[in-house]
Length: 459
Image: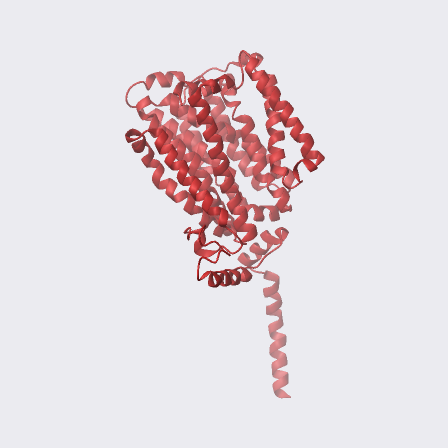
């Protein structure tokens, strides 16, 4: 995948001089501070896609909504991100790279804090959508900083840092969210962005070059492309989110939204191919390597984010795990990444990057196929070690001890208490702090019990 193609997609004023200064073998300390600060932003933006997954039942109970509507807590954030990611290049040239980056780095934690104070589903969706708008800026900005602040010899290190941020974050998100929810309440998962954001804003303010705004570019904006892209992507995301629940095209609502997505996204493609200054340069897809790289990233994204979303739902709704238990299981998907990703630059120097990518994707695909045998009978150590699931899956009869496993797993599940969604947060709060009224009633009952025991003894 060519570096020129990447820079043409996301180059912004304020980055060209730094790229020229970094033409040597090593980047300056200032450049590295700026790059690492931007990685904090990318990590948090992607972390917040998945941090709510292990805590959805608690959040749904806290804001008084059901399981079907609770998925919008994640979806609204994604809609905001996918709309603003393509706009980042254009808006960073209008308002200057530094101003645009700093503004969104400040807005991101503020909208996150606002989510903690949401009292119903509507306000939560709005705040998560606005948080997604700011988070959608931080991801491409981090990638741009790697390609423009670092010399070519050090770009593999920067790309490894970016890969660590965008792949480790969704794996560790449910673990962080589950621990905070179980021990401190679901609201705390929205405060976790504040300390890193302070560090990021301070570092970026000290290292990014000041550039004037170019408001005249607003007149040259591809507004038709922006409008059709925003409506089309939002409609498509809604169809994918609500389609399964509403029986897909049997629902008039889903059918109408699918038509809207088809019309507006088709118009977007036509507009972008005809425009002199398109919002998204689709002509780059004529380059074979770039097109293949985009396709592979789309497929890996489907599998990665789909897996990290489905597994917490399975563990919470089928296995009835609490938020912290879900996080502990999913932590094992992030630990190998944390250990291996720092080694990627060394592997890329010794082996063809295509071979490294192929091996990594193959291992990930094999692990995903292992999970297709998960069932209500799966429990305990089967979530930590594959246990030859394909060969010894429940009901296959291949394992001579299968009946013992099934009996133990059923007994384990029967001991778990299943609470209605709307009482999850209340019940956990009661367990944590105790029922004060019950203790008072017990204290009041003690003198009467003592008096009755004396009276019975005297009789």
